[in-house]
Amino acid sequence: MDIRDNLRKIKEELPGHVKLIAISKTKPEADIMQAYNSDHRMFGENKAQELIQKQPDLPEDIAWHFVGHLQSNKVKYLAPFVSMIHSVDKLKLLKEINKRAKNEGRVIDCLLQFHIAEEESKFGLDLEEAKNLINSEVFPELKNVRICGVMGMATFTEDKEQIRKEFRMLKNTFDFLKHGYFEDQDHFKEISMGMTNDYKIAIEEGSTMVRIGSAIFGERNY
Ligand SMILES: *Cc1c(COP(=O)(O)O)cnc(C)c1O
Image 1 (spheres, rainbow, N blue to C red):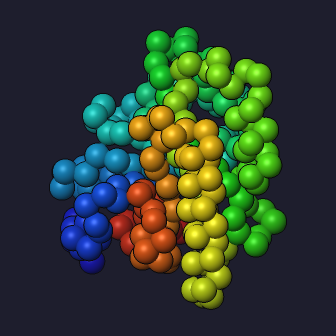
Image 2 (cartoon, rainbow, N blue to C red):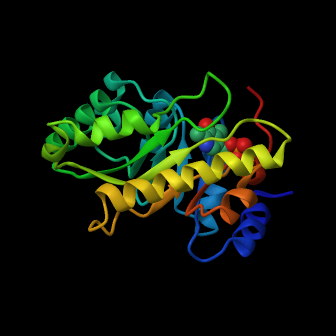
């Protein structure tokens, strides 16, 4: 199966309000260009180093989404061009993004990443931590970041009910934050959830952004 066919099939079945981020990690630039040439513009990577390497060789009008764990010392390399950072899980990171965005004369769109999976290893905030972040003294002063919603990754499991439960929890978290803190902010509207194996469930549970890699580009060989 070819990348263009994969992309077209997925796009045909996505509801109009759901954005597709093509996750191109580990894949060569030629693969990205195949998707680009079939008019796709939103791509995602999960490693800063890899994204920094690929970005200069690829068209400037690609909207790059950063979806992996981000260390503060890498933010400065992404700040000139990144379109959205899905993985804000600490105030310290958000402050660094704000600082580097300001240096670039930009406002960078961010999502708060929540820990919804059973696995210990997945990064992300819980609701208490998110409230503390939002209620912190500096938060209102961070004018060069724009919080656009939430992101989460479900447990890697065959248990569809488990996955659904976790996505539902993320949707509830989104609703709680929206009504509690972001009611008057129209840009707080994104729920980034759903990958190759679970994006259909994610959409049923309210996803507005799906992050799909293998179903577009094929299996990854690490
Ligand atoms: C790799 C990755 C994806 C895409 O995974 P697939 O299962 O290949 O669709 C989505 N989100 C994040 C954060 C990832 O690291």
